[in-house]
Length: 548
Image 1 (tube, helix red, strand yellow):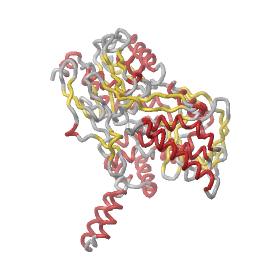
Image 2: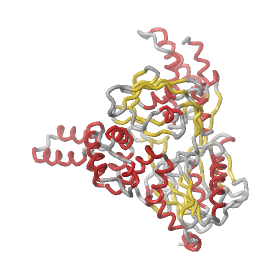
Image 3: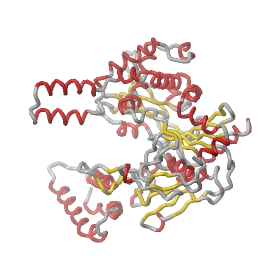
Image 4: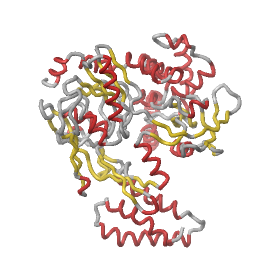
């Protein structure tokens, strides 16, 4: 890359630099001269021949990373994929992969999509993509190789448990459409339940259609919208969904930032369809951004009971801005403020700790606000606190590590080869003791593939024990404590048997019978959903909830 080509990247460099607190003129003058001088010197004298394009891209990525995780540069190819995903679709084969130990493992298949039709199974280990080995690679390196333009082919080599050799697949990429409402059902007492996976284009229409279909079956006496694990998406769609339940013109969210475009208010655009129907929103630690706007606005307006666990706490607004050569930058321009006036942003990316990590507000420092009609106290600066907190596993760090390590998917691949689980077993209310025993044995085999969540603390204490010359008795006591902190998935599962068994059965049903079968089972077992049903089953009790 020639030095004169640097000018094509300057808009991105200047735009990211502008977000810092120093004078824009100083940075765009002296500091950019320094950047160009360093680039020239490296380009001319470095012993090897580095790629100037890669160096500049990494420089921009580094600046963006200093701001927050959401400000990023998109190349021409990347922006196409980003736009497609906001529309709820992308070019690919319809599978999700995760790093499990040292392997890249298929953890989810979208029903009816190319990978599932080709015969890929949950639990398959991907060992090559287009002839490129996945060994020592991360998911973020491999996923872009699998995705691609619809109508093109991708070659996958997989290792399946129980087979002595690998299997080769050549799969035609398709336009993968992600269903924003993957499951809905009219529950006992004529209560409508629906899951919303993401705030993609027209998802509000999908929500409206699902509610209307259930309302035709029987007039709805309550509505539950499940936003757990929903990472957000398009703001306009969130505002429209809030508008189904509150008067037209109700303020939902205010944006506050430096530039005029960043200072906006968003109000509900239409008359409500369900203005008085008892309503509950389910959230957890992975509910973020647009999910928090819906849950937080309806909480502030005393319109819905929020049930579950504290949400993620993302109150930052991003927009994409065009640059030269087809590149674009997604940049944070504002913060969200919901009707009570509070901001839901949890982490402060400007003020960081000694290790460079963003700082979260302490509980005692959080500012108090009040809901608009019943003046209930709500807090700013840490996501949305549910009205009814029902802990599943977010407050159990070891259990959370186990369930989010995707070992269930790996076990599914293992047991399918061993034929451990039969059709009759899945038809029973609980998984059999034989299946449970096989699961525990499998977890024991995986113990060495994962580090304890306390590994960094253990390492520090090991260093301290050496530097401070602990006595033999102290060392013995520390060894005992260390063994208790070690990652032992079999022990964690055994100590949480009831919940882990239910989640395992749900995952087994999803893999073997499909998502609908898994959800039909889970709606009867989900403690958060069951509590929510109790809260909204009687309209008078629902209304009295906000007067407490």
